Length: 121
Image 1 (cartoon, helix red, strand yellow):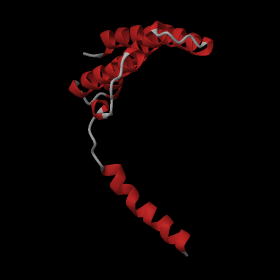
Image 2 (cartoon, rainbow, N blue to C red; image 1 turned 90 degrees about the vertical axis):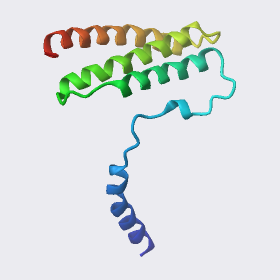
Image 3 (cartoon, rainbow, N blue to C red; image 1 turned 30 degrees about the vertical axis):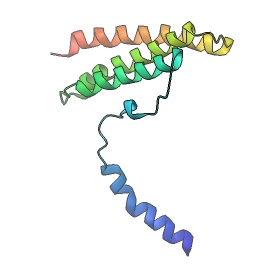
């Protein structure tokens, strides 16, 4: 009985959560303490991404909006990967992943920019 009541409460509250408008995720409100080095670079990359994505005007064209939003998202991943590579830590698996992220995301950004040149009229 209690499980059924909890299940019903969750189902009934789902539309409320779905309608909550939180706007762009505010990574700037995350506690940063005295961050330095790579940790600060990660937060700076997220904040830059949030600022750029939050300032974008949606066109109503799903493909164009997607491409424009993905560019700063991918750039943030590149910035974070490079920050890790520049850090003192050199875990071989994370170094490999970071290099793969940089290569893949740069290729995808180039594709998105070329796609926008053809399709953002």
